[in-house]
Length: 369
Image (spheres, helix red, strand yellow):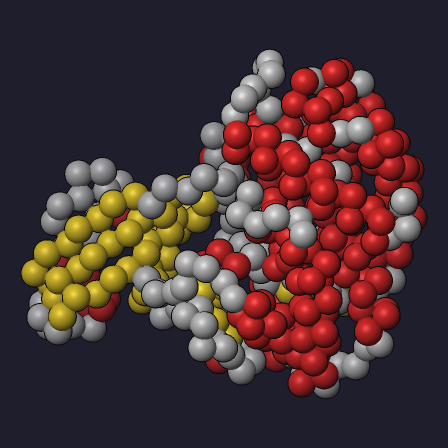
């Protein structure tokens, strides 16, 4: 076994691994940690594992889920919010998804990767052994349409809802309020109100006085926006339905990973990450946002109807726009990526440019012109 950086808690001998994989013999194992550029508070590590067996090669991913209190980023959460944040981010949702009957309940076009094992490490962590799924690196317009319809079927599925009620994320009906009172208010609103951020050269370059005024107008209406969100129908959601987590070769079906935020959410919630994550990550320009919103809303609505849930397009559009704004607009300025001084970092400047264009569209979408 060539696993020089393989954590001791993941160690497994070849005989045990052969039994886990259902093969006669394991000849060799190669493991390497998967780099991941985003902060994932309940994920310790991800490993790419290639196993040579008597039945042929097996490609795996091993993901270690852990209590958020063990994250090296836990200390940056304000002390007064830390324990509430830990309670609000249960580390065991994803292991429980793979232990559950969700894979059987998933609607047409949606599947879980094959799970070989969920192996407890201790009381606060577990390793999830799943197949490594081939997928397209670039999404087509048709893939967005297919994904939106699939997420609509998923959201309105009664079978999925019953499982979400049992093992899903606890914030459920008050997700928007919890997120605002936790991360958004302390990390972004307080920073904006303190005033210093507006003189930062990168921020000053891309945030005009008019856009800043509209951002403060959003802060003023956030309480009423959250109240409105909490009147929307409560369905189910993956919780982080970005293209990176919806693996497909473009055949209209998706293998869905990263289930840490699975649970009950308001209708349309999963469209937030589907249409905006590419802009947030710097992979897509803001020009595509209106096009993807129109496309995905139509197909998500069809998916809802597939599962027996009907909603007028205007009502669904409003539900999407207020949730997209509530969850994405205040955090559009990437505070965690700003250097101490000005920078000619082309990637950061491009990201700021596109995020501010997307912010303009989000605010206009809820009437904050």
